[in-house]
Image (tube, rainbow, N blue to C red; front, side):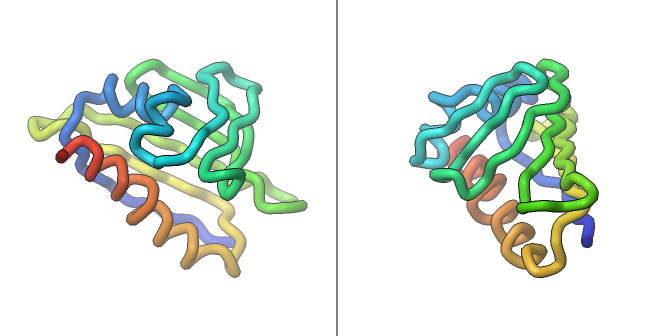
Amino acid sequence: MKDYKKYYLIPASPEDIYLALTTPSTIQLWTGEKAEMSADPGTEFSMWDGSISGKNLEFEYGKKIVQEWYFGDQAEPSIVTIILHPDKKGTSVELKHTNIPDEEFDNISEGWNDAYFGALADFYEE
């Protein structure tokens, strides 16, 4: 198992980023795919036609999202924590993803950079 931590700078407010990550209609705008998402702890979510799925664990409006991502039958859950920090250029997004299966690590880290936060940054830069 591996962990991944990275910061991203996105040119939008923390509140806008939070809504873009928790509102199905907004997720669809920047991903181009339908999403199942709710900002209620204990609910399950699915994005990119099921490529990413899991359970929502914790929310703090405009500041923090904590999710468990599913990777089959793991002994320890894979936890994603996203913390949104105000920045003079928008939002500094602090990402920490723990317990990523070794065989999934390269794909997941590329996905964070390109499809997830890369696409979100592109959405707000346009």
